[in-house]
Image 1 (cartoon, rainbow, N blue to C red):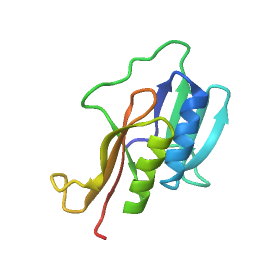
Image 2: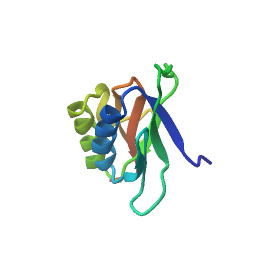
Image 3: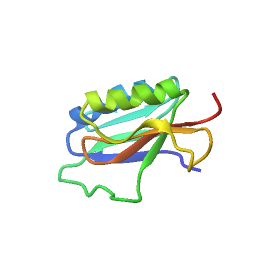
Image 4: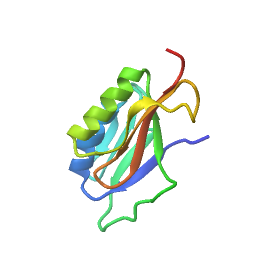
Length: 126
């Protein structure tokens, strides 16, 4: 259904450093870069997620909004969480099974440096 999604960020360099690291752990790469934005996607493909510099503070969505990135393994979810904490993210839910979402739902939750709620998830049997 979705073609792509973008987040407004207050510091493009800080956000790019964060997203380069956390998305790399999930197998995503920079699809393009310019002075005010960076797009991410699968290697050899276009962007599905972008960060864009805004000249003034952007209003970050609160409770009820988050973006979940697909992970290829539980280890990738763990790496996403650790990498996010190393690069300025805040813990919003340790990696682990979430049986209330499904018997195989394994996820980690982070608040990025701008305040966006993000998740890495795999929902497949081991």
